[in-house]
Image (tube, rainbow, N blue to C red; front, top):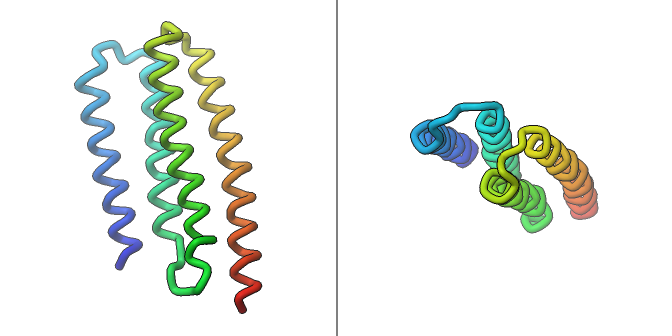
Length: 125
């Protein structure tokens, strides 16, 4: 049941992000689409990781580490989007490269967190 709640929250956040961006951003150029797509990726990373987290075993903190990495990615992605639009004059190449680098770093950290959580869970059994 909790899995469906996390996915429903991700769906609601997707709608909120979509409505907010389309209402607040008058010029839908390539920077808009870059930020929009990477924002949705970040929101759904958090939702999927929260939905897939198992809370039944003793290592709940180890499983929470994977979700925490996703939340940090969401915050850093939003921060990079704001920084690239407000302070860097919205150069699409710089914005896109920054988001790709952040996604790559997130995937590496996520993989390490997932491996660590699996290792801790195996030690409990």
